[in-house]
Image (cartoon, rainbow, N blue to C red):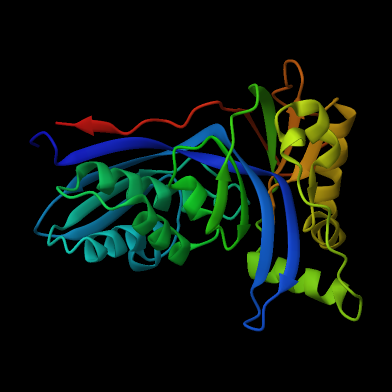
Length: 294
């Protein structure tokens, strides 16, 4: 293939160091405040321009019909917004657990937006790229940027990029089941029904510059209701705390939980629920760059 017609990037997953569920809109959508951090675990996403087709191949996981794939939808939206007549072939090598709260599908979509913008003869403005990302999901705007860490609000459309924290080792625990995001929001709504919503204290930027203060601020509003419905997730969190994790928390709506360690993280733990996978990783200080192929 000729230079400038293909590119590759490592689509890094994310964890939510904090996730607060705020007011519910009349549409039913919940406003969010979340602190994102990129981690080393990543899918590999490649895209080649091809005027004869619009296709996607996913290796390593069954993620459903191609036309429903978030990376494929991201590519369609990009070329349409750019008024670009090109076709494309996308290849995704999956390593991020599907439906685990680590933003795997969103990371792939964000990667596709970055790749196409690098290959486009007329790249889209950052504001246009953000608009496309917001249409694809609340995690996609962050994962379409080159920010290793960010504080985001609403549907991800309001975002403040932050300097990266010092790298820390992680252990991800992945139960043998997923947690549907819509289902988890339903559990939160049922738990809050009839109670006034107390607004959380705003995140102070001074608390987001070092792991010490952040350890006290880390929280996930999904965690109590998800643990109430899945005892295995609670068992995973307890195992991480016994192993010395300074933060042990659900990511997104789950089902993956993560432990942050000041020193060397364990690569496995005893006494975990049957079928739970252990994935070593780390919080990273930079976003993987786009690599041109050809």
